[in-house]
Amino acid sequence: MKSNNSFVLRFTLLLLVIGIGIGGGILWWQDAVAPVDTRDPSPRIFVVHRGEGVKSIAARLSQERFIRSSTGFFLLVKFMRIERDLEAGDFRLNSAMDARAIAKELTHGILDVWVTTLEGWRVEEIASKLAKDLNIPETEFLKYAREGYMFPDTYLIPRDATPAAIAAMFRTTFDVKVPPQFHIDVKKTGLSFDEVIVLASIVEREGRTDEDRPVIAGILLKRLKADWPLQTDATLQYALGYQVYEKTWWKKVLTNDDKKIASPYNTYLHPNLPPKPIANPGLASIKAVIYPEDSNYWYYLHDPRGSAHYARTIEEHEQNIASYLR
Image 1 (cartoon, rainbow, N blue to C red):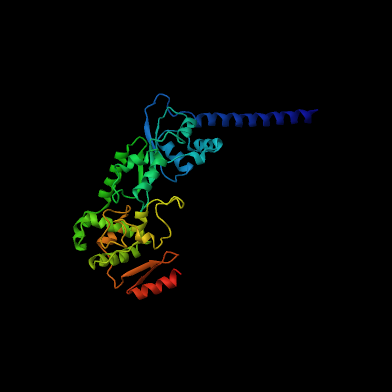
Image 2: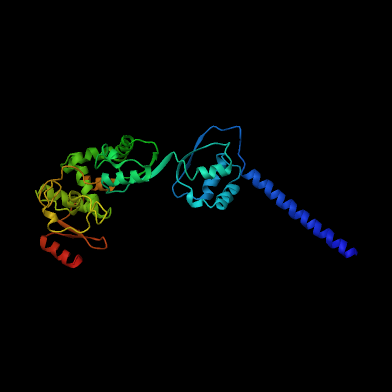
């Protein structure tokens, strides 16, 4: 009888300990996800960086006193199964929001959106990206975009920004990123700065690496001075425009008939630069044109792996074609 009483006592104590533990856990959880200060609804901006993980977000939310517990927020996001739904950008939060409300807010309601445009994109490709990420009509952006000067970069763009404001943002970035010395040294090329951007846009599409772009720029500059046609595929691709079946603005395989197209951008027929840039070059391509690499080469091509092969004569070039492209 005594042993039974002892067992009941121990079991009761165990249940009491478990109950206290559960109760303590519940109290901790309730405190962890509660608002930091219900009396402070004033909004503040919180930025989630691209590629940032939940642990980092939780730690910064705690440091900036949007949440009480980084651990509690981390567990909450896992429990809600929204880890992959958290978006990068700017969010308007306040200390009166509880952790659950903040977690939900980070999945939508972004004030600013991260948008990345790539080197060598033409303005139509940028317009398509903006339409997808910001729901901006492509035709509206194209009214303000200036080919060649929409600097490729990663931008944090306000969701309510106008097409004109976005185009101005891209152009301002161009002016900031291009060093003043470039404008001075451009005189050495014999070209105006606008002509440099035209050629840089071609080099951006024709080159594959920062190593081959200065060499290609040097070759194309020599052709211009010798009154040769540039004969670049990129300008021809620009002239041909959007390829419906390939779903790209840059036709992959050019034919001899393509080289006969009547267009000022057809550099197989016309010896001068095209009238305007064909894409938006990055800084490396602009630099390559202003500081080209001198060489004995007049021809170049890229093999299927992207490696550049140069030639001094048409005979060497034809041999490279036979060796690397056939």
